[in-house]
Structure formats: structure tokens, C-alpha cells
Length: 243
Image (cartoon, rainbow, N blue to C red; front, side):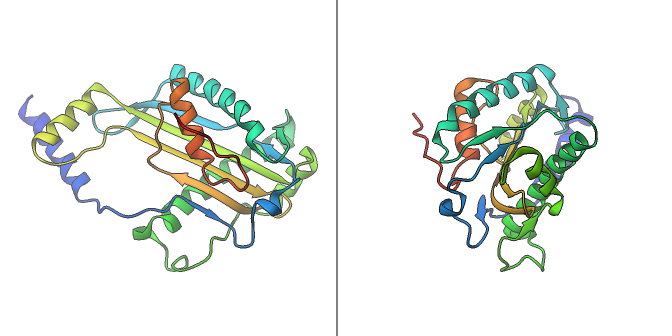
């Protein structure tokens, strides 16, 4: 390796090492909400948001369309298999056009933003906002979700997002180089959010959000593990037996 490359690695390693390690929660339920509350209610399963790419040497994400398509197909298949484990009727996201389609897309994007905010500012201890310290789990997407309830006939909506970045050869080489210096560098990003929203009120009633999920979403066994983690502790859901 050239001196410039080694110098760049050193700078990057310093940046990574300067980032403090912080503890993290992974899930929460709105106070007063339970499996009994959900019993007999219809759940709208939104089409999941899936993104899979490669992490460059410097840690930048680069999309891989073929991996993303494979992951999307595997996720859809695994969710269909898991439907029998719910104590609720799951409805597919309706095919909409015009303003209603735009409205649903906006709320899916809003969920992703809210879930990220919960994970960053409430679940991560080190980053908790002053207004969130020692506060109950209380987040909302707004009352605009009521239109989705009217369109679908569902009381609740289940949102799912997965994002994976697999380390490139250069990133893995940098990881080995860092190990030689006695320091740790991660190769890859694997995060996922699954959340249940009361469509009548917009209230987020259950969330599972983790920035370090397992399971290789590019194969069936890995996706099985990922879905089990995404739906972990979902109120009333039959637990999956992992082999």
C-alpha cells in the first residue's frame, strides 16, 4: 500500500475510534397497548422498504439492484409464510393511483423518518434528547393516517424497512489492516425497522428498530432470521423457532 493510502486509512480509523460506544434498546410498546388490544383487528401490511448495496473502502454505500431485488422477493415470501403466526387478519397494501398513492408513499417515508428518530434519540442512551430522557414511548405519524384506514378497512398498519450494506473487498482489507493495529473497524451496515401504527390516530404503538441486525438478506435462511428479528416481541405473534 502507498503512503497516501495508509495515511487516509489512519485518518478514517481515528474518526471511527473517536466515536463513543453507546448502549441501545431495540423495542418499545405504547403504554396500555397489548396483544389483547390488537385482538380481532385488521392489520394493513405495507409493502416493505428494501435497500441492499455494497460498502466502499471509505464506508460509502453503493446500491446493488440485483441484491435488492433478491432481498425484496425473499422478504415478501417469508412474510407470507409468517402470516399464519399472527392473531390478526393481514391485508395487502392496495394498489392506488393519484393523490391517494402519493399520500401512502409519504406516510411510508414518514414512518422511516420517525423510526430512525426513535432509534437515534430515544433508544440510544448516549443520544437521548433532553425531552426524551425518562419519557414514555410516545411518537406519532399524525392524523393523516386515518385516510389510509378508510381506504384499506384496517385499524392498524405494519411498516417494515431493511437496509443492508455488505463490505467491499477494500472495506474488508481496511478491517484487516485495522485489526493489525489492534483497533476495530466494522465492515457492513445492517439495520431494520418494523413498526405498528394505529391508523385511526397515527400513534406508533409498537416498534422494533435495530442498527445491527443479523441474517444475510440475499438468501432464504438469512431472510428467515432477519424477519424473526424484525417481528421479535410483536404483540401476540407466535414465536418462531430458529434452527
